[in-house]
Length: 387
Image (cartoon, rainbow, N blue to C red; front, side, top):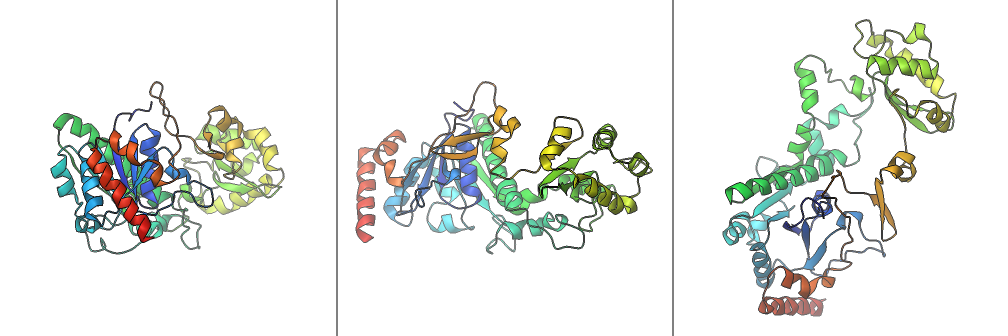
């Protein structure tokens, strides 16, 4: 049983950060029910999305009076609800926070958007790349002289969006236990990705952050913090910042002390103008051995080294295997829940294959009456007839 066991949360089906937030909450033991549109399929070609794990689903037509009525009745016994529509959509459906909180004053109402619930861009379409562009995060990622490099959709959708929404929901749930009052959590990807840049705002304030892309030591400008190609075309990652780690790298890799000494992070004699020359020299050294050979030499030392693994390779690494960082669920190898807990250990669970699998028993569990269940069945029958 995970640490959120006992909490009942309604997830209004969406894409991107919404499902990831629902997965995180379900991973931690919350009972999350995902409200799908009528006719939605949770399995594509026999493959169930990883981010839908751990929760059951229910098909409701929220544009119908019956669907809205059922959702509002479910809100009465829920601890939280979250949605990812554009601002105003839930209000137009008659399911905005005011109406839902009127049914349950302790309800936490989470809202996930890119731009936020207000502001000049609130009603504008966008995606991860747009939100992190506006927050200042995207401009800082990439090589010198090249265009910004989109970091998949990790910074906006998941880091700045889903994780902040999950954090906000849990914070509000804790506060509601003391106050007895619910509230709205407004999670915007532009806000979250802005906050992820906090340390770099500190660097800038102290005059230690040149906004020229690729010029900061954490963005690959320095020889001691970058990725290098090996003899077999693979890559390794070096992050030898502290002096003792830097010297260990020099020793273990057999680097020329006359060339590399005094050029580590924080050394007053370090000359950034020499870094391109040092990177070229280091690159030449790392091309002399394969990735596995460098692993034999450096892995497990304090040289701050790691092989750059693909997502296919990562689950097979001995460290990840020892920590059981990946689990297999219904034949799909996937990341295990995180973080770890010493006592309330979460268990990863499957999701329902189709919304209809949950149905009547789920509604009874959520305290709905037989009359409500009959209304749900009637609504589903009408939906299937229409198709």
